[in-house]
Length: 437
Image 1: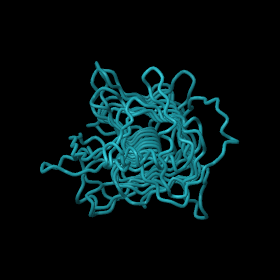
Image 2: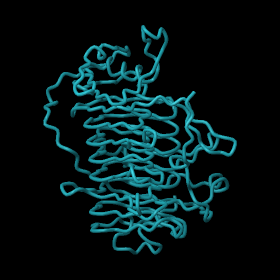
Image 3: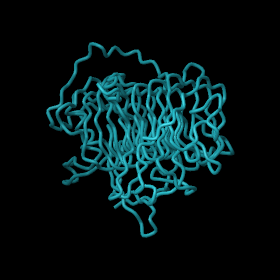
């Protein structure tokens, strides 16, 4: 059994400061992000519908150039076979038993649109979580995907998993991997720790190689919920980056005016879970960096959905505790060619009853872009429009600054004990609304 001690980052690192009664915080708006262009024409590509079976035929497609082995996934069954192969369910004739392969150093190319509707998806990469006697979370029996998955601009639709397990998404657990250029359309996920449409949980490979998610889009109807670290793209990322990605719902609102699409951190005391770290792009990105591995977030967009949780909730990022190498700051920003924005979303603290406040104390941070940060950081070249941030107690919920009168109010949650957030060339502001619900 492989056991890896993990930091508290993706779970909950809330700082006990005050008890807040009746806290409600919302932000309505969207976050926009430009992503890398893909020249492939997938509009007329064949769609392979999943019948629930698993195929390993993709193994026969292997080609090796300059020491790099490349595989091609050409059907829904083969995509399911990739999950089976990584998760330890593949029976190797030479081994005469089920074995797992991380595919480290290999490239897997998707070559077809895939429809997963009608069946429960098993994430690619898996593991479990327990807690030590001291209460620290421990990752157990981890079987990661560690290669490169290139979606080629193709679309995976109908992704569904309601098992409420750890590490839930198209990929459950990746380590030192790259996931790029894939679109996920219409997704329904209910998980526990680490839930995201593209990746549930990501980390570095033995401290040497960061995981990267880039050029990915989530669209259509988006319904994602979990108990810790929940995001539209990524649930939890330790020493990981999300760049050039977009979460853009097209589902609109129902007859009551509520958003059909959502990313929710759900409180459930019986599971000792708090609904912490929820973000339109990522629930959590963090862990103090060394000189090799730097987390990044730039060119991201979120629009058309509700983002909610109990603490540390942001339209783009719920929580970060990244400290850059050699004093560098973690930033939410853009590259020269992109934008980072938030529009037409509802970002809120959703659980604030007496039972919760008795068990957990602290600030309930919320922001249209960022929920909370432990270290100093900068939000650069971002814009928000059509965003509403609701609150019931400004002493416990900060949005922009303590008075909620900042010209750029609503960008981030803030407390005196958290890191300082600097806004650089940010435009627009949220509408702050008192809400006692």
